[in-house]
Amino acid sequence: MPLRTIKKDTAEALTLEWVLHVKNYKLTNDKNHCVGCQICSLACPKEAIKVEKQPKVKGQKAEKAKIDVDLAKCNFCGICDVLCPYGAMKVMVDGQHLLSVVEKESFPQLTRDIQVNVTKLPETGVECEDACPLDLIKTTWQTADGEVVDNLAALTEQERQGVHVKVEIDKEHCPCCRVCEFKCPEGLIRVRKFMNGKINIRTEKCPEGCSDCLDVCPITGALYLSDADKKVYPDDAFCVYCGACKAVCPVNEALELKRTSITHTPIKSGAWNKALERLASPVDVAKELKSKRSLKAKESVKKRIGLKGD
Image (cartoon, rainbow, N blue to C red; front, side, top):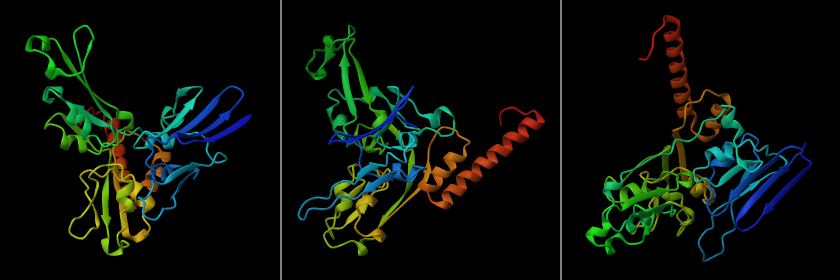
């Protein structure tokens, strides 16, 4: 049992701590990155995390849902940290970012597959930085001696010789929405979604004039307001299926969201299977588990007859 427990809730972060004899555990929900989605609450095996819809003020936009964590239930396992699409949850042990479920190989890590080809970058690069709805892209130019160049276009042809470009993407907080891939110059960035699914808005059930889902959606273009009927519609090309919209929808049947697959590092774990059951649809979970069993059986046969590779 911990010697002391601490819970702090500020405008910037929600922080929980266990102070033990030899270790200190800390869980932080960074509110600047948290979008109030449903992933952490669905994945938590202890049901320690709750998504709380905020009261809406008439005439104002809806606010994102608030995340709360029950200190009496949380055991700092790190599952919420692993699965947060936006990198808003972080578990620290003695000041180090350590995830027991990953270290014990009982949980996978999300695969954030983001490739950058800097040869496709235009001289300004600014439009690509602006393309990211979460402000996670930074472009810098450096001379051979490490000096940062603010504006490459302002340099002479001779001065540009030896200048190297660097495109940095904050992968830790990137949900892989692919907006940058479409808005940046063609071929500059390639993104593979780690969470796939389906989203449908039954507009006939939406309250008149309601756009709460659009108000809180963190991804530009994942939801949009139609000029024709003033209703909100989804665009699966950019949706990351986090459920921030679902968390604030005033009519449960109006917004349908289903996660069909999650791209992750290889894992064979009952803990992960249970989390997957809470996150994805039963049909798609069954498909993944069946695929794993088939692969396991294939590997077992190979070992018995001494085969290598495929």
